[in-house]
Length: 410
Image 1 (cartoon, rainbow, N blue to C red):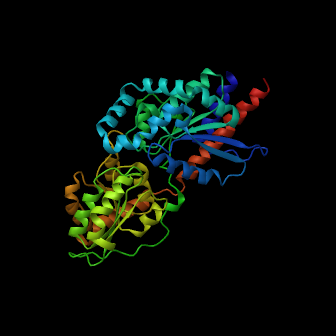
Image 2 (tube, rainbow, N blue to C red):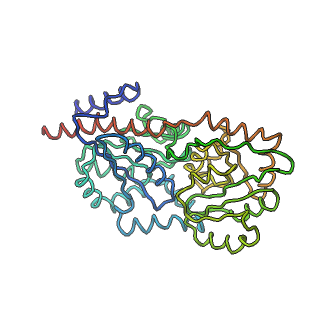
Image 3 (cartoon, one colour):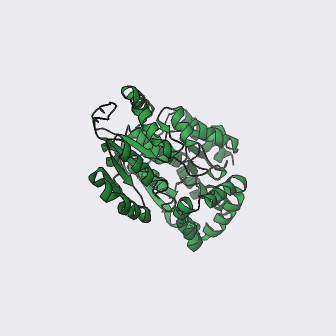
């Protein structure tokens, strides 16, 4: 017990004084197991990709991502794959699920633990991780319960993938470290019982290709918009929102071009193409699910999107001003507050007012849009993902491999 405390105390000192031990330790491989999900939107997948980029740069580090809901068997896959339907067509039901996670998180934890325990133990025995990193709220409490109940001594880190509106499912005070993207999220974690000494604030992890290295031509501002203003419309990987209506308002009122990403919502993509393609010709481009969002962001002047945290942070990294037109009930509702507070974008609470919002953005020779772009450049930390990975790897070495060595000694 004393040795365990001493190891963890040493890590906390090292972590918060930024005095890191070397990545290499006798050539031994450091195994990181990341729990994520590709079924519940594209945000977790984007974060996992950003992390893997940095893990892959480290010699002697092996990071692997698993689909968390696969450990729950048929039930888990069925539930997770209903995310798109719930967020597109059953938003009230989605809000009810969110409220359960706020008021009775133990119900979700117990169900998840029961359905995943057998499969997850098999993964532990096969992968033998030095550390487990969770980037999905559903797997924090359940995994920690499984570890403690079955005698596994594996450090556990939570990386919160929401800016402010976090559910108690994100927080388990047994975690060795909780990484938050904002001070507001940190405060929520403390409110849910986490120890401040176990929380580190590091800005949202973004894939390196979104950091805009290409100089964008200045926008020519006038009452008649002398230049074709280019808009990108998207609403998360599931294609939620009034994208067609917004595009029509823009195309009818401005000298502009519009690109729409409908994501995985093939019904929406087909509907938009049938309704608008002939009418607007090459002024409108409609995409389904794409893997080149970074290029589209670099080629346009304004992003119009819902309050998806990873999309908003990717826009900030791309130095692309954003207009927020909606949010998933629950988890995204406070993101607009954060974006406005930090002057990273603006909010249009009713898409019918999008014309006036765009006019305000470009008024006074584009002062507002210039101010937003300046704030984005000042806010951006290109090293944020690397910092997160450094904390995780050093924790794996400092605690994970030390405990593994102690276990070998019996």
